[in-house]
Amino acid sequence: MRGMFTAGVTDVMMENGISFDGIIGVSAGAAFGCNYKSAQNGRVIRYNLKYSHDKRYCSFYSLLSSGNLYNAEFCYHTLPNDLDRFDFRTYKSNPTEFFVVATDVETALPVYKKLDTLDYEGLEWLRASASMPIVSKPVEICGKKFLDGGISDSIPLKYFESIGFSKNIVVLTQPESYSKKNASPILSLFLKKYPAIKNAMKNRAQMYNEETAYVFERKKAGQTLVICPEKPLGISRTEKDSGELRRVYEIGRNLCKEKLGDIKNFLRT
Image (cartoon, rainbow, N blue to C red; front, side, top):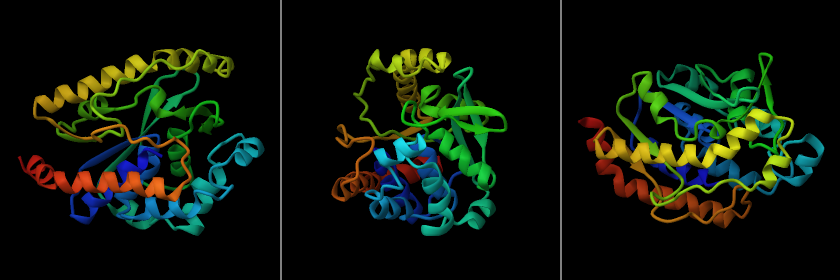
């Protein structure tokens, strides 16, 4: 739910007519970021406020009954198709290229998937990108299984540069001073079934910290603009309190408003 910060940032950019050639999202950044391509500012905060307390959305009931803390069918199919409809037509017609990152369970390597349309399989790619280990079942797509993209590539700036996006805006949900710590050894006990993922989780802190350092190197070089909170957001991954969701969303909105001039200048040069 730190992604509420990102939603605040992207909503302000959409409201101000800022467009991009390409967008790449990881985990919540994928699940929420797709709304940029469908031009639905306000949708992320709206449905999270409405359904955060619904046991079909995110609950231990869902975890026990389905194996997924965030219910797969409700979150990725019922909600966008019926309850708070996703604009699939606008998404498809928007020329912005949209990519998500997921982690191959067998190899623990990142898979970068371009989603031109959000059909059933496309929605499953979003789910795969945001499927946190232990509290999510691997998502099977075309005979392969995937989990959270953040396991293998949390901040895919290098990948985006490698395919031609040389000038980028990076939205981080942690402050610049943040340094990720190694996961608890207890985590390994739950990942015996997936040895590659288990090993990747041991190295995730180093990977994340190195990628963060690279982002700020590119900022110094003038090739990247970074938007991140000034201090930790202080919100849990599964926050349900509407006041807290709104608080973090407004932090993102306010920061983006402050940086609008910088953003426009960066994109012009």
